[in-house]
Image 1 (tube, rainbow, N blue to C red):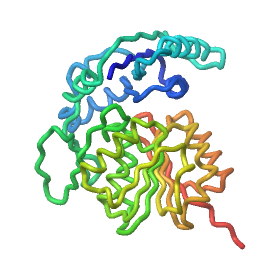
Image 2 (image 1 turned 60 degrees about the vertical axis):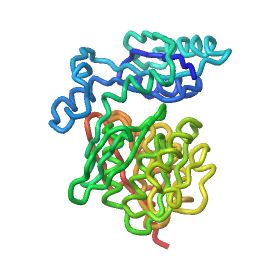
Image 3 (image 1 turned 120 degrees about the horizontal axis):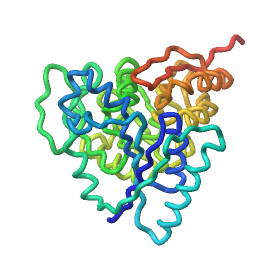
Length: 316
């Protein structure tokens, strides 16, 4: 299949707004080249195994958001709409920096091969090792191996937001736990939950590409009997209640999701919300509190925040 890569050079401040514009245009997968990520990784010895030196040599203070549109008949119209909407963001007091947009044609095979050389077996949390399907790795001690091929779906497990979610899952998933993974991407958090002992996991994503990729990853890890991957918007296709709901998305969607949590989370259940940039934390916390969610703790890694919350227990 042929794709058009749309690369937007913008600011950290405009990240969520630009990402939302791209998703609304129907992109399949987003890659973010983030100077903050590179600096963080540069200071972590364990990161040198999976970050290409050429990436660490990049010299930019902004971020580059790369997204992929299938080459349908209306692709040019979509690209022009993206240009117009990005250019309009300053009207809403959002600093987009240079806001430059470049496009190139790329095949799915070229896209896959271009980043595979950067993705190596990586230990995340206490015992979880994310292993690309094309790499060899021998587990040490009690390590749990997660086989992963993200394809064109978001989620290799090495971004700060995913790392924090995995660490929280290691603390909260018990044998027999029921988990909902909202915005599952490549399925990484669903697979981690099942490997940690969850008895049932529902993985949901609005992106059909993500659903297809997540389903393949579940199959590769031989967890079809524990994980069901569904195509749908947030909680629309979810059945029953869970002990843990994890959502590694963006602040605006996390806030929207928080209004529905009480109908899907067991009384003592935990809501793990990530993908939140630091400047949006106060907005998210206020929204959680309005929706009767009690903040248990917040975790920070780089410029990203993960919030752990529970349903507020009201006195009868």
